[in-house]
Amino acid sequence: MSEGLPGFGCHRVPTASGSWRPDEPIMWLNCTTHGGENTVSVAGEVDLSNAHLLTELLESVAAVRARVVTVDLSEVTFFGAHGTGALVEARRLLAGRGGRLVLWRPSRAVRRVLDVTGTLGEFEIALRRPPDAVDDRPARPVTPTRAGVVELSGS
View 1 (cartoon, rainbow, N blue to C red):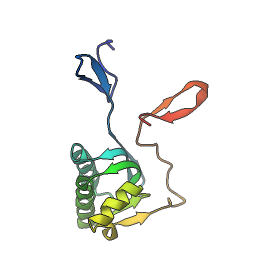
View 2: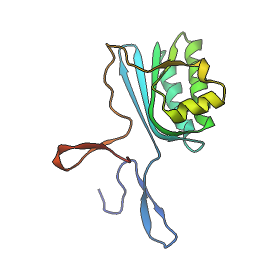
View 3: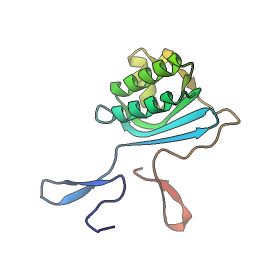
View 4: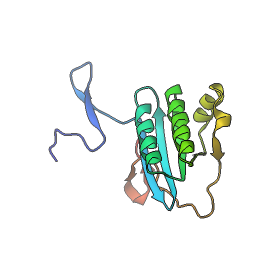
């Protein structure tokens, strides 16, 4: 890889001084499938600039006739109204196909917006995984550090 090119998932943006700095992503998405259950993990900020990516991913998962789609929202730090729209649309699509959307451990930010918008009661919320559920990878990329400790990137 050339020195001038940023790493996967990152790009460079100009600063006021004319130099360039790395621009870290603000949202991470991860999708895993196990049996009839699909898990979409979301981390970081869901706002006007990126909620469409969550909508597109959830629409893709719903299109394969998934029985259950669990959306792990435990690592979401900011959740805008457009994120609510993504979840409402996914729930509607899944219900129309006989499936279910389950929100797993929505963060305080997510619960607050869903409550304010009056949609919290429309969702099935799980605070614990079923005993047979697979332990999924975190949504954020994991990077090894010295001494073998693992940290979430962007933390």
